[in-house]
Structures are given as C-alpha cells and as structure tokens.
Length: 327
Image (tube, rainbow, N blue to C red; front, top):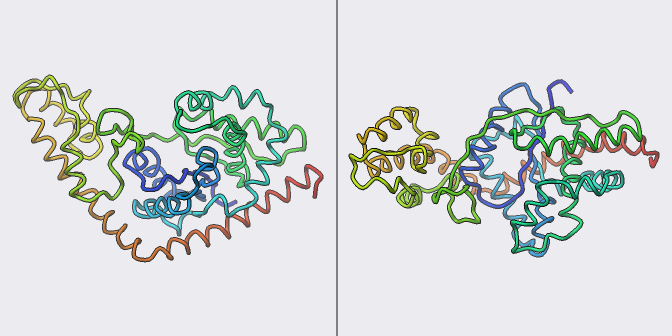
C-alpha cells in the first residue's frame, strides 16, 4: 500500500445534520486531501443490529446519506465509497472473529450497557447488537487499515479491534494489522434546545438545509433567559446561538465580548447567524439538488466502490482462511 489506508463509516440514518458534518465529515474531507487511501463505508449491516424489525428505509437512507457526503465535499475520486452489505467478506470475517471473541469482552462494553439503558423503544436483547463491536472490528481489519479517525472518546472502541487482532494473530500467526488511532478534533454541536443535536430529539439542522428552514429553526434557538433587554449583560457560554456563532463566525470572539458587555441583543445576533448559515448552506443546497436529479450517479459511485472494496477484502480473506486452515 503506497499510502496509509484509512477506514471510516456511518450508519445510514437518512439525511445528515450539522452534528455529523462538524463531528465527522469535516475530518473526512481533510483526510482525503492528505496522503491517505480512504475507504468510506455505508454501514448498513450495522443498521440491522437495532433496526432489524423494520428495514424499509435502510436502502433509501443509504442513498440519502451518500448524497449528503458528496454534497459536503467527499470526493469519489479520492475515496472509495461503498455499502458494507455488498461486500460479503464483512459477514464472513465477522463469523470467524466471533468464534474467538470472549463473551465477557462484549458484555463489559460500556456502549452496549449505555444503549440498553437509554434505548427503550426497541428490543436490543439480540446477538447482533451484543456482537456489533466484532462486526466493527471486521470492517477495520478486513482492509488492513493502518489508521481509523476517532475522537478521544472513541479510543476504547478502536482498542477492542486491536485486541481482537492480537488474539487472532496469537492463534493463527501474524495476519491482521493492528489499527492505530488517527486522533481528530470535532466540534460539539448542540441541538436547537441545548441537548445534543439528534434527529430523534427533533432539534437538528440538516446539511444543505433550505434558507427558509434555517431561518425558522434559528428563530427557535434557546438564548440567555437572564437577558430581558438587549443591553443586559449576556452569558454566551451557555447560549446555543453563540455555540453556532463559534462554528460559522470567524469573529466569534469579538461577538462573545459584545454579548458579555451588552452591546448586541439576542435577536440581532440571531439575524446575523441566519445570514452566515444561509451563506454556508447555499452551495451545498445547489449541489444536493443537482445530485437528486440523477440518483443513478450515486449508484454508479457505490458500484465502483463495491468492486474495489471487494477486491481488497478478498485478498485479506484469502490470507485469513489460509491461516485458519480452512482454505
């Protein structure tokens, strides 16, 4: 491999929001512009772990998600974009690795426990959900990705993949590459109501949102409840509007001081934010509309990505089967 290989993925949930952009996609764009061989995967098999009872939206959501990827600047000439389910080797390696994964590793996974407690609307007491870290490890190890872009809060997930690689290699020889963390910075994007931005909370602003929707949603943003008059001293640290000013306004620090000194009211601050966000969204909205005119272009990208991903995955699986002595 001439360039360092990177793999990253997202579950298909349909239209993406600004939390996805500033939390991950902005980093993906930066990575593809560097000396990396990028594999960006639609993790539709992962979607089955929790959405197994209703799969009606997974295919359409996958297309919508890839359209958003292309809209923000993911370049199919610089990255291999593919659907996980179209590369059978993911499932094949998942099965093999599940044979050597101790049950205790999965039961101690903090994310597993958290989601069981938090997600009450779905029955997650199934083998697929318990074993999703093994599927995630298979995704990474299958392509011998040297690097995986993660934030510091995701290091434990990557370490699980490294532990599985070490365990496999101890049994069968040095075949699997232990992936390294490519630490990335990501901005925390609050929702309109100050909670984490999430479609399930109905508090998100979509990528390539229309101007009318941006204006409508910014109007609903929570501001400083202690400010009655525009000249009252503000507290920008807890204000959703200022959190977005930090993302979109190059003079955010100046705005912070103006707010603290009571030099600008919340409504004026919101109006200026609307203008900045509309300017940011306009070219993406235009690009998205063009892509929506011909979804066959998206399928063409996914088909080309599938062929390259299958080729690389097959090479690894041949090595794995030979090591396990089933080939």
